[in-house]
Length: 277
Image (tube, rainbow, N blue to C red; front, side, top):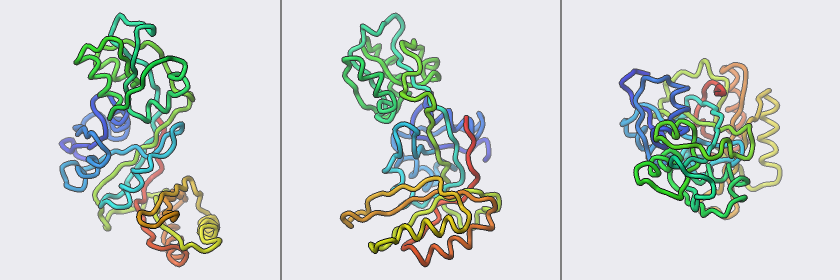
């Protein structure tokens, strides 16, 4: 992408989204902070940002279900992914100690990642829109007695001290981020070795099993299967599947067979498997 293009992210300076974007795109492109994931998608579809970066799942907190719905109903295409190791710390203004803390502010997913540590203390937990923004507010409003859960980059950027390091429940704490661009049916997928699919099946016994057998029969690895409720269809679900393969030329044959076994099959994106940072 060109150096003048903006990358829309959910979050602000010092956030994990920004760190993931810098790993994937490099340090040159401008970052367009967004308060919500919906705004990230709007920035991309409107052309205000050339690409967007959106978290989709975390190895501790699980899937971010609303974002699967965003993918399915928006005019965006998944063109890449990146996995970022998340190290959550407890941050506060300099000179404070754990005994001084009354409240802890952070994004709800970050609080969930650190639930075991936070449960050991009688603190009130306050959900915010972003980890880094919580850290920034501590500095801007000189909030004594309040801590934030955020990363080391936010601590450095806003001049905060780390009261407790690595407070997430699992040391192997990774978040997967998707790279989003506006839909373009002419975009080449010749180097792709992974695809994100959307579909739903009829309500007959064995329908989903036949889909899974088909995927396996074509030699694809099913790396993710996520069910989400279908609006207006009580107790019916659609599925988001990530499949991995060796050559992009394998994908059309699978899709052709899946169209006979599913309803409303959509390819949300075909791209290269992401790297871990």
